[in-house]
Length: 261
Ligand code: ZN
Ligand code: FE
Image 1 (cartoon, rainbow, N blue to C red):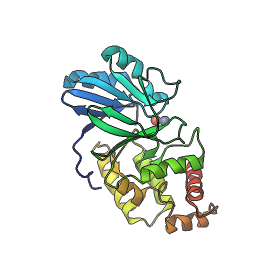
Image 2: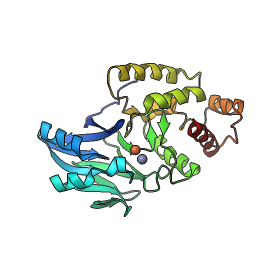
Image 3: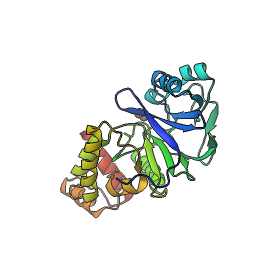
């Protein structure tokens, strides 16, 4: 995998639970964190690095993304930005599609990406080619469609797929190897995919995060973005899962297949 081009933002993962990454963006002694499901590992890093928590970014209401908000806000008096959803306690600045969120002097375009949940948003910093996408797009996969519909999720993923290929994709979970194992069932001959499986297995052996990916890389390997792939359509036919060639049809067939496994 090629590293994201021109990546100047200082971003590091704070591991939480079994497979969450709380992404920390640092600038001049101040930090922002994305989806702090647990306050403790964040507080530990703040102390260890001697930095101040400026902003919490929330992508959607699930507890593994919001569980640390109350404690962190009480401890640091930071600001919280996130979806316009009353279910999420402590949001100071509600973000809707088309908004620009200012975080540590960076501008993030807000994209509404419903599907996994109805309130899900993603934040894209075009100047730095960085995307925080929560549980919508994963490396080699996508979030389960809990609250929305398959066509809604496909539409949301299409928004992300349309971002510049060099965009670094920071998702919340280290699900990569399981996702890629499924991707291989869907597209067994995809050489980019096979190479990425090898690279990610090596990274995991070394204890490294396989995140971020890039939009360009996901377009080559991720079966949930490859609606146009004749190989995937062929495989769906072979599996008796083909219901049509349109992007929503292909997406729904692939997502339904994954949900069975
Ligand atoms: Zn979630
Ligand atoms: Fe999650």
